[in-house]
Amino acid sequence: MACFAKQYYASEAHYNHLQHQILASKSQFSSFPTNLTSLKNSSKRSLLLQKPLYISSLGGLGHFDESKNSKPREPLIGCSAYEARRPQPISINIEFDEQAKAAAAQKLKIGVYFATWWALNVIFNIYNKKVLNAFPFPWLTSTLSLAAGSLMMLVSWASRIAEAPKTDLEFWKALFPVALAHTIGHVAATVSMSKVAVSFTHIIKSGEPAFSVLVSRFLLGEMFPAPVYLSLVPIIGGCALAAVTELNFNMTGFVGAMISNLAFVFRNIFSKRGMKGKSVGGMNYYACLSMLSLLILTPFAIAVEGPQMWAIGWQNAVSQIGPNFVWWVVAQSVFYHLYNQVSYMSLNEISPLTFSIGNTMKRISVIVSSIIIFQTPVQPVNALGAAIAVLGTFLYSQVQSTMALYKASNLTPKR
Ligand code: 3PG
Image 1 (cartoon, rainbow, N blue to C red):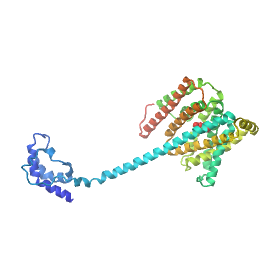
Image 2 (image 1 turned 30 degrees about the vertical axis):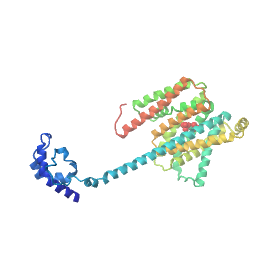
Image 3 (image 1 turned 90 degrees about the horizontal axis):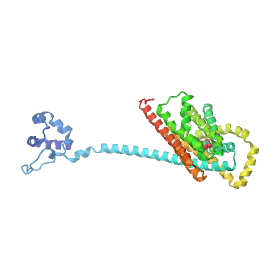
Image 4 (image 1 turned 30 degrees about the horizontal axis):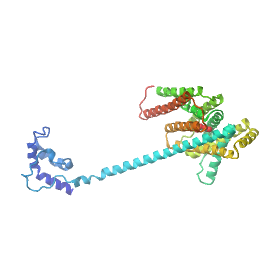
C-alpha cells in the first residue's frame, strides 16, 4: 500500500507534465485518447491505482526533455510493486514441478515393469524351449510352471513376505472361467513350442488382437469402426505369410498357437467381467489364478502323458544334458511365474491398450532373441511376414487408442 501511495503521488505530481508530453507526441500515437481532461477527472485514479504496473516506462509515451526538468524525480514505477506479486507464479511453478516429477516417476516405474517383464519372458522362453527339446512333455512342463508359482506364493503368504488376499467363494467362482481359459492357453502355447520354433509360436501369437476383434464381433455382437477392421489386415496377412513360408512348419505347432490366442482372448474377457469391483491386487490375483489352473490342469496332464512316460523321458533328458537338466526345469517354471506376475502387476498400473503395446514389444524381444540363441533359419520372406504381423499389431493398438480418445471426448468416428 505504501508503495502504491508513493507511486500515486509521484504520478499525480507529474500528471500535467505527462499530459503536455502526450499532447506533444500525439502525432506519433494517433490511436491514443485525446480527451485527457476527462481521463484526469474520471478514470485517472482508477487507472493509476488499479493498474499501476502497466506503465513500465514513460519513454514509450513520448520524448522527455530532462534538461527542462531539473528537479530530481522519484521514479514513477518502483520495482518493489512488481516483487509483491511474485509469490503467485512461483507457487504455480512448484505445483507444476511436483506434477512433472510425479509423472516422470510413474513413467520410470512403468518402464522398469516393462523391461523386467520382457527380460523374464525372454529367459522363460529360452529355458522352456531347451527343456522341451530334451524332454518333449509339454503337459508336464506346463503343470510344473503353475506348481512352481503356486508354491512360491504359498510360501510368500505363510512367511508374510506378501500379504495373503482376502477372498470368498464368489471370488473363486468368478475366477474359474478365467483359470480355465488361462490353462488352455498356456498348455496350447507350450504344445506349440514343443513342435515348432519359439519365434514361430510368437509370430502366430502376435495375431491375438485379430482374435479379440473377431470374438467380440461375432460372439459378443460388439461393433467396431472400419479402421479397427482394416488394422487386422496386416496382422492376419503377416501371420499367414510367416506361416506359409516357415521352413519347419508343423500343423500341431500352428494350431496350438492359434488355440492359445483364442483362449487368451476369452481369459481377458472373463477377467474383465469377473474382477469388476474386486480388491485383489495384480500379484495375488495371478497367484490365485495359478493355483486354480494347477488344479484344473493336473488330472489332464496325467491322463494325456502320465507318470510312466515322464519317468522314461526324464531319464533320457538327464543322460543327454546331465544333472543340470533339473535346473533348466526349475528356471522355466520359476521364470514363467515371475514374468506373468510382473505382467499382471503392470496391468494394475496401465491401461489395457498400453499393456497390449507392451505385449507386442515383448514378442519382438522374444522372436529376435530366440532366433539368435537357437540359430533358427529364417528366410527373408518369412521375416517380412513376421514384421508385417508385428507392425499390424502396433497399428491396431494405435487405432484402438484413437478410438478410446474419441470415446472419452464423446465424438463418434465414422464407421
Ligand atoms: C504360455 O506358456 O502361457 C505362453 O508362452 C504364454 O504366452 P504369452 O504370455 O506370451 O501370451
